[in-house]
Amino acid sequence: MQASPKSFCTDTIDKRVATVRRYLEAVPDWETATPFDVEDWAGAQGWAPSSIRDAVSHVRAFYRWAVRHGYTLSDPTATVELPRAPRRLPRPARDVAISAAVAAADAEMTAMLALMAGVGLRCCEVARLRWSDVDMIAGTIHVTGKFDRERVLEISQGVRRTLAAIDHPGPFVFFAERTGKPYTPCRISQLVCQHLRSVGAGCTSHQLRHRFATAALESCENITTIRDLLGHSSVSTTEIYAQVTPGAAGQVSRSVVVPGL
Image 1 (cartoon, helix red, strand yellow):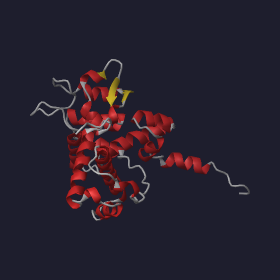
Image 2 (spheres, helix red, strand yellow; image 1 turned 90 degrees about the vertical axis):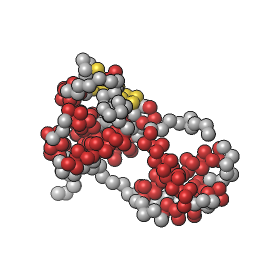
Image 3 (cartoon, helix red, strand yellow; image 1 turned 90 degrees about the horizontal axis):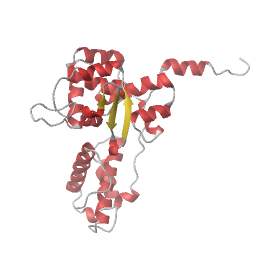
Image 4 (cartoon, one colour; image 1 turned 180 degrees about the vertical axis):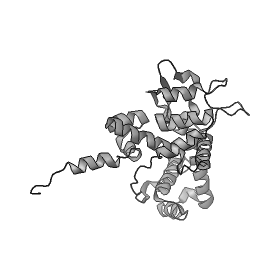
């Protein structure tokens, strides 16, 4: 099987393979499946609308590959009707929760928290970070994000101190001592989420990234800049992450004058 010209992160590949296997087990006659078969399968899983959309996307990628290589002549996902995913508000982690997590963390965990909440890195970007990507003097890090998109981000003195506190050899900033290999994105997420749960933070690793986006938007009030900092390709994606603070929204709404009042 030839590799796709597109590049995907390991987590995306694992999710895609697992979803397609689940689909093939439920729909063994996949070569002649109809759009209704796909819809029935997705609807029977008990997933939220957003999860159904993701699952159908993975199955659609499988069918594109199968059609391209001549394993089937039709793609039933082409006309599948997807549920509308509700637009959800950003869920930034609370500062008090982050403070509690930092207070209870060792040097490595503190650096992970700092990179997520203070720089906005994804779990996959934390996992890929090498010491050669970190310039302590200039105060910058070279980040490789999704689809191998690269960006250079400035980091604060506080984040620099957390990185400087890590004392171990090896090319990667974070790795498993038992194997000597860098952590996978999934493992980074597990470690951070476990730590957040242990201190009762009430948030996930990804909500640390939401917190960075919200704090950055409050600071610069330019969502295009936040888009670039987060490594998004679209402002519409950034809007899911960055929450307008109640104070800022209130100031805007109070400034609108109603004629005659």
